[in-house]
Length: 78
Image (cartoon, rainbow, N blue to C red):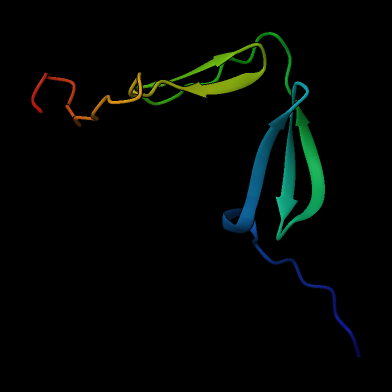
């Protein structure tokens, strides 16, 4: 005899932001979506920002052909 059972898969669900919605996936299989409205504002870590339904990371990059990269922290220590 077969029996229905409910399994918690919460920690395996991945969300991807797309077109004003969060698409939900379980092991690359689409399982649903969360529609976002204008009232929802994401809370992001330092160096990240949300703009026009996209998420951006602020990074430091080198410019120029001979530029060298030095890793510095927020306090200015390199």
